Amino acid sequence: MIDPRLHEALDGERDPAELPADLRESYARLHAAAQLLEAVAPLSVATRVMAEIREIALEARADGPALRLGRWLSRPRAVTVRLRPVWTLALAAGLAAILLLPSGPGGAPTPGDREGVARFVGHFPGARSVEVVGSFNDWSRGALHLQDDDHDGIWHGDAILPAGQHEYMFIVDGERWVADPLAGRYVDDGFGAGQENSLLIVRPAAAAAQP
Amino acid sequence: MSGRLRLTLALAALAGGAPLAAQSSGSASRLAGRVPAAALPAIDSIIATAVAESLPSEPLVQKALEGSAKGIPADRLVNGVRRGLLQLRDARILVTRAVPGQPVPEGHVAAVAAALARGLPPPIVARLLTVAPNEPPGPALHAAADLVAHRFNPDSAADLLVDAHNKGLRGVRLLDVAVAADHELQRGGGRTPSDALARVRAMLPNVPAPEAGVTRRGTKGS
Image (cartoon, rainbow over all chains, first blue to last red; front, side):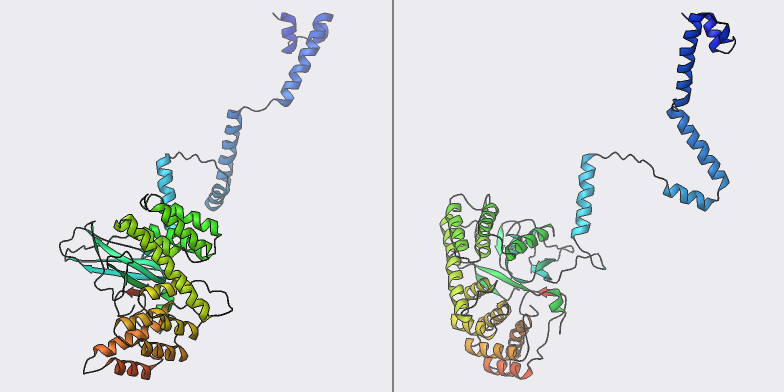
């Protein structure tokens, strides 16, 4: 409990000199502490935010639209983005696809200096699927499927491949291995049953354009 | 096209002269899970032998992957890969004789092995290697193999390709020489293979080039 006389002195309602000696000593300590707090007291967050807003409002009233826009663009701002991991991965995959697959004017991938475009065509009426496997895709299924959009039995597809020699075969309906009847070049597959692989020689796109 | 990047990286790694151990272990990782367990140790051993002999291992890896994808029984699969190793050895002998005293150029052995697999006679291979020992031999060898496959005389075919080279045709343009000869032969009118070769020789070096941009299969333009 504070002595009411000390309270009045601190509030400026009583002359500190009129206080008894013990209260005068307490007054001196409390007054010094109050002055110290007044001198270093930080503004609260709310106070600082409101001051900033008032400053911006004043600046906005004083400047033209262009200056205000420039100030808005140049002022650093904190942005919080919340992403689900699955969307983050999808975004990364999309960016990787854009960066890793160069596109031509028509949106189609374009070959590099040591690559060429190979066009595969096969006539397989009634087939449900046709894919190409070969040395260019480690003989792995699922990498290069041909299309027959108009269901006329002519399956076709393009692929960018490294320039040079590639052996390949068609797989019809997921189970029937067929050499390309239009390949023109064939080579024994070396497994002793007399089966032949089709042989494709891809020209570098740059060389193909030369006369 | 997602496999394109992987393929390019793999080829780049091999072309870059990866350390032998790395090549061997890389091959093993590519074969694991795809090659039947019964064949895997023998195939690993064949590939390790190729690496130890500084022969290209990629054709053997491809042969193992091919046979596995086709469901070839383990014994025939191993024999197929072993046959590939023997062809690579034969190829290196031919290359070494063609460029004596020089290091074997990168890619020559695999290209020669591929030509031998297509049935090109070794003397024809050796002759074409000697004409341009420091150029990639693949196109000239394939052009010769194309001509031989279309029943042209092997020596005459090699003569034509040597002439084409001497008149400035290089690389894939040599394939156009073979295409032109085949077209001349197909024109009919009692034209013999010798006639066709003579007509192409007369037009050198101005043999028709294929349509730019896309490699089609078949004799036209590829």
